[in-house]
Image (cartoon, rainbow, N blue to C red; front, side, top):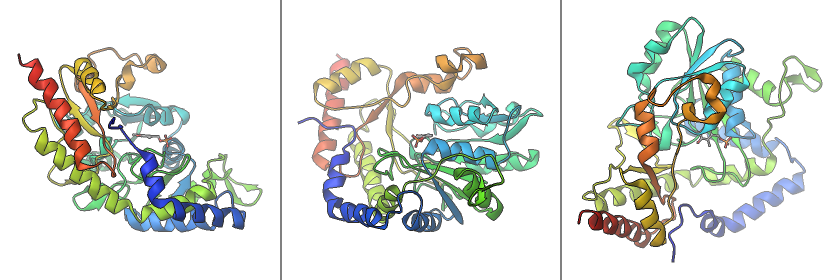
Length: 370
Ligand SMILES: *Cc1c(COP(=O)(O)O)cnc(C)c1O
């Protein structure tokens, strides 16, 4: 029996009746796009995140694009972000015509290093876009202080951080705007694509609602150049019912992380740390090793499926060669990209599966010592 990296089927089996009746309700209503279920999901997610307003869209990438536009980012501007993330963070900056400017991540937290931000600010800088990577909240207070001093917007990429908390407040409510993804494998996943922007500013909320629906203030009255970024009714209905389980799923992830930490304590791997003021939600359980290729091959032969998040930092990807970065520019991100392994992590993981993964890791590590 293999241990999968992620298992979405089990969740569907557990929720099947509820999901099918939610889907049927949407089909019966014929509100296939936006509609009452999406509006209800927005209200419920706004309350959950503590941000005030929530605007549902059709992907996390669309959420980032619109949040940047709502922050006033456009051609000629610069946005400070990190190279250790999924490509969408950087791509969304490009969609606005602005230029991504990278700063390295912190070697312990793996998220934006606040000590490097100020040196990256230029007269063109418009916004800072930190990423709550793997489900660990960024150390936001120093970043918000820098932004305030320089009059910059701060946008959270919370695509991996549903329910994560920084100093008792949820991600998505910490800055000017927050961006979530509901891609199926995320901690809160749709049955298709989905995303959402949070904000506490009613004026930005209004602009975001227009931008996602062709910039229309009322039907056919297009006051802004907008997009077709609307969420589907079916996704809203499914996300609404799944939101009720998110806290239980998050606690399960945290318990699995504790179990891994106990059984892998002596393994020699560098295990993820939770900053004292954080609630980490373990979208990814990331360990670091100097022997990644050999470890992954060994785990594979034991039937343990793993992942890498991410093998190449964005500044070294061919698609972004135009930014003219070089190997060595962001050594911490590069080291993590070379040594990270993502162990199986999903709420339905069993104690027996965690034991199997841990045993396979320990077997490899012990064999290597001789
Ligand atoms: C998944 C993800 C996105 C993009 O979300 P999509 O819904 O796939 O468009 C953006 N940023 C990060 C950090 C992500 O993990």
